[in-house]
Length: 345
Ligand code: PHE
Image (cartoon, rainbow, N blue to C red; front, side):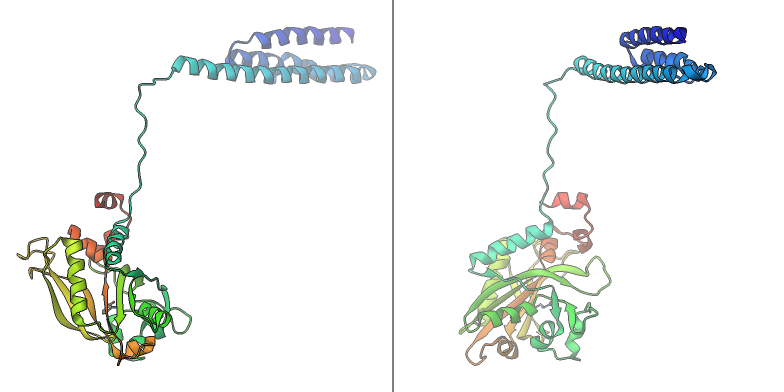
């Protein structure tokens, strides 16, 4: 018994010293396995306890376990020390090269649709227009009926509509329903607003058509508003956004909510009206639909058409940007390809 306790005590002193002396992880690991590993000296001593006389076992067991715990703690402590040492050695060996240039920040950019929208806002703000926001989820009543398209009206075919499971609730196909919301809010005062926002159409997506895109609606209501006010406004807009001296022309058209209705063209700035792929060799680019607000629509909005008149227009900012930068595929606006987005601004 006494020899066993002596053995443990010697082992403990020697091993403690070896652990403290170990200069790296490898040396420490071999000290550990020589004593505490499966075939280690202490492991073997502990295994031999069973052959001691019964009355000696408890004390020997206690001493053996205490020795084991002590050495394990010491080992863990030294391992931590060595790891810290390794880190500080690495740091002092590396040094810092203060002449290295810093890493540049990559700045985000505005999306081309946002850029186009903001340009449009700026131009109309200069003409005294306010911005009025409509809603993207609309009722059939506002999107169609109050715009002079009762159920079954053939003009509804101009817009392929997303219906929801709620009866009469749809995604707006254009920003025109905002005209009614605005009129009902402003009546009986004059109005000069633009109504920007997303619209949705249930179409096959192609280079020329997306199923979601922006529109900017314009609405002016007053006592003396005429078609020439529309023409002057459009001329000013075209000059500001595409460069001064643009030629503007009105072509007759049809919308149920305007009378008369027009499509507005400007001369193609990409080929100087010589004819190119973008203007389909006509020299003209279509930029918006427009017209004088239909008397029924004025009445639905709360204005007496005998006293009030107005004009309205609707344009697509993506199309505005496409014409300005000769972009031939509208899908580029919504596929988030950074190579495209980075070129834009
Ligand atoms: N809402 C029409 C469209 O989406 C455009 C338009 C707006 C036409 C206002 C006339 C007046 O096609």
